[in-house]
Length: 155
Image 1 (cartoon, rainbow, N blue to C red):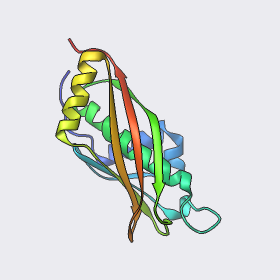
Image 2: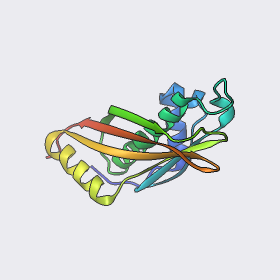
Image 3: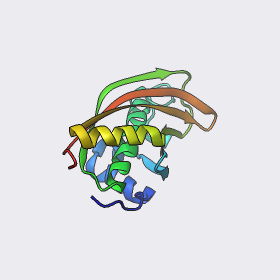
Image 4: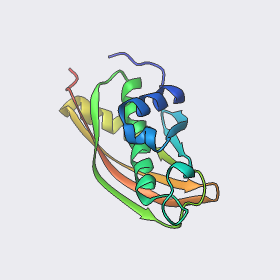
């Protein structure tokens, strides 16, 4: 188990497009990433609903993907292999998305250390993450997700 650099935005974007076809269809891009935060973007044109705003499912998916990708990248950086899945998902819509949009997930060091300790000790870990979703005018909604990692116990 060797720690490595945090994956670059381009590397994570390529991974999402290669392994999660809906991310490619929505034209999701990793715009900014670091161990404690990750921001995804998507163009409105690829995610329109009949009202000329972003489709609710696209907003929800971007929220889910931001949290999932942040955990995936942290695990990869730590040299850990685990499958990350979403167990529970809820999205609160505050206003329509009318422009290209983004989702930003944040992970505190304390959250990460607890998550990592649970994974090491039990071979599984749970983490609730809150992800903001917005457009050029500011926040539009919030995704709340419970993510689960399933891996091997670390001796």
